[in-house]
Image 1 (cartoon, rainbow over the protein chains, first blue to last red):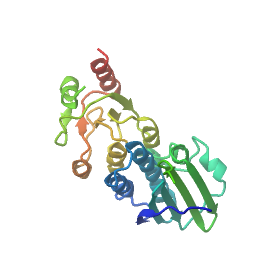
Image 2: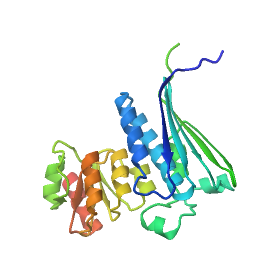
Image 3: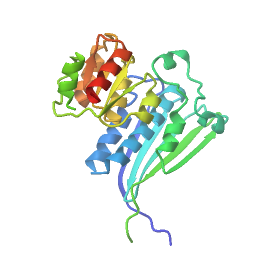
Image 4: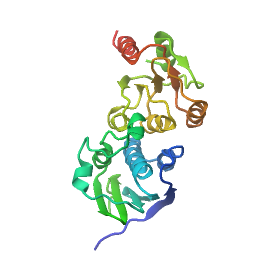
Length: 149
Length: 110
């Protein structure tokens, strides 16, 4: 039997494309929410990094979308879904150093080609699904320790 | 080492009211945000040339002890305001990043 763990917290944040003024505010909000729940600082830091990288990718490259934060008893799940343009080659996009960032973004310190890599490294479970012309969905899970049953 | 002591030793100009009890444990020097997110440790002093709004978010998420803008680079007022709200320590140093890092290293490892 698969035991479903309770959802402790659910938040949905809309993400506007190219809105660098607001970029980073979702991640800082997620961080605050997790700290308020009394979560382990290491889990909070990892979730914050995952969220920031995903948020920046959506702001810089997507046509907008949303981020959903789901906190369950044993895990933090962050879901990113956007309205396109989609990633043609996910393996290539995940390669450290690969970036399609325009010069203006690189000058601001983005586009190091480490975003997806950072997300993956800070997650326990990580999955990207994408279809060109439709959009991308990323699910990042950080386990906070399996509760005893 | 305490942040107030480090700020005094390095001749840093403080842009937001300090959290005086904050400890500095190390330092990191980079202008690539993903690199900073991947490699800074909580309590590091982050030395950079980037001075836009997202820098405050990165510093906050990694819980750096403070951000030092090298070579006298000054962030705009909205960056300072955001740092104040988020309680992130911001500094300006007249020195280039190399010298800031050198002075910090000497202060932490005398």
